Length: 323
Image (cartoon, rainbow, N blue to C red; front, side, top):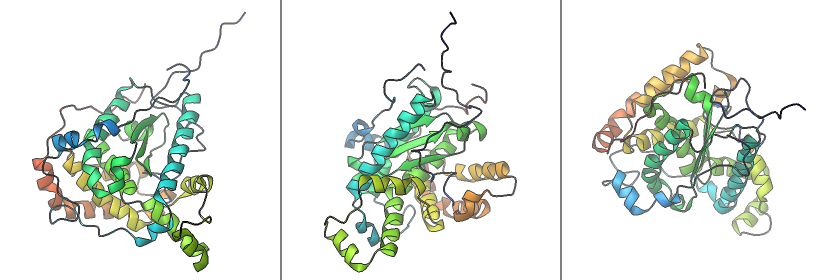
């Protein structure tokens, strides 16, 4: 009798990406811009978000829009066309399905994986300073997970559902400050509700005034969770969304005690990977040199925040390429 075949354990850099049909296509690089697990291993961060945790990290946190820090204006009124509760519920359902898909393929990092611990530690510092940017964020059940895939990607879905692909950590050999830059950027998309705004604009374009009126009246014309989920799969952020997320992310990383200047080194690494030929997904993103220029122009607005911020007590180096 042949010995039973065991599935391979989680690896940081598999040769092929897992098949994750429930993973959104938007994100850092995908906007056109253990043993068998009974259930996905994930961690909720709501316990960390009390006033005590927030004050320990950011005792002098100013409200967004004040003179210190970046200024990106108010959110679009169009977001009212899409109920936040339904969108966040759809995102949570999609995220759970994605984690199940990853777990079945041994592509979901176990809790003891050092790089997952690294991501969760950085998130524990970023989340408290993110709360003033969106009143709903205090209610979100934040999650952070690591997916074993060679792809260069990361995202934060509505409601604070964060995922990093291991390829972006390994291939770019990211420092903690650079990881915080990416995480801050993706969290900013959720805080500023860019997905909700994009979907609302699509709704306003495709339907007439009567349907819009029905939506605002909370009638029976709203989309189901399934239809919201399908839209999340193919959502594309605009250049304006990306630029705004860069700026908000810059402030979040600074307040969390991570060097905001890491955005410059990060985009130089991205440029080196792309070898001067931006892939298709960058078509709706500002170019690398443009982003570097914008970051450098705004560093002065957040430098004081970074200098006063409590610095991380734990640091990780980049992961080894072969694991």
